[in-house]
Every structure is written in C-alpha cells, then in structure tokens.
Image 1 (cartoon, rainbow, N blue to C red):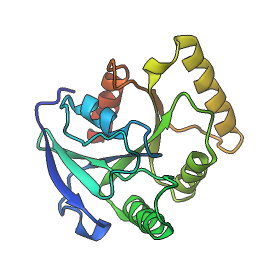
Image 2: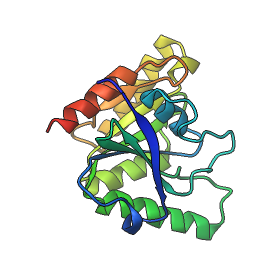
Image 3: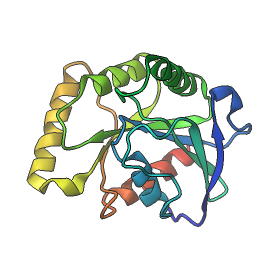
Length: 197
C-alpha cells in the first residue's frame, strides 16, 4: 500500500465525540514512552504528524489522522504513566476502554510493546481484557534498532512463551523500528488486507 496523503483530522476527548461515518479506524496504544507517535509518523511517512515527546504521557486525547482520504489512524493516550494523578489515570482509562470497547469503526487495535523489556503485567492484563471482550488486536514490538537480531529473536520467543500460558491462539505480531523503518511495509500490508475484508 502506498500512502499518498496523511493529515491531522480531529482530537476527541471521548468516544461520543469521535467522527461520524463508516471509515475504518486503526488505533495505536501502548504504555507511555513506547514510541507510539514515532511509529505512526514512520508508518505514514510524515515527520511531526503525530506529536512526539521525550516526556511520557503527553497524549491526552483520541487523535485522528486521515490517511489516503479513506481510513483513520487513531493515536490513543498511553497507559500506565505513574506520575499522573489518580483522577487523570481513571479518566484516561475510561476514555481508552470506552473507545476500544464501543467504537464500531475500530477495525484493529495495535498494542505497542518495547522489545527491550520483559513482558509487563500491565500489558498482559490489558491484552487479556481485549481477549475477554473479543476486541481484534495485534502486538507491535517497537525499538528493534536498540537490540541485536539475536536479542530480538530471543525477546520475541520469550514473549510468545509467556502469552501461551494463557492464550490458546496468539494474536498477529509485528516487529518494528521507527528509526530505520523495519516492519513498516508489513504493517501497511496488514492494514490493506483488513481494509479489503
């Protein structure tokens, strides 16, 4: 798939205020500082489209980007950022779960995981909740460029091993780097495949 256009469309504070219409939506989520905005920018080939920050927890809204005038990428707030107030964390959780569980246009949720870290309970619990609610998702390992190919292979295998303890069938998985573009074409091909269904 070729990206011919990608532009910011709207920021929404809740699922009720998301755009109307039938366009498919591909949402991206992950713990704070997992490299979500960088991956979206690399995926869409537009530097600075999704705002990146060295400060975790900057995304507080559902940010929509219209791609090829046909479908949306939705940048969701990161979860698990400890320095937020309890009220902020509760509000974000309501916003995220409200969108993920109720948004019919959401075709797939890409859950981003930093390949350098062992499986984190917060990610595993979130994926378990997705599974229990029948929400289609794929795992996207980020920051591939930070490890050797052998370490990447070992980390992926370990992650799969942990998931198999509670999952009969594993979700689709992708390995990516926002630095060198690895995994971009595979992700776009997967979106194209879902668009065709």
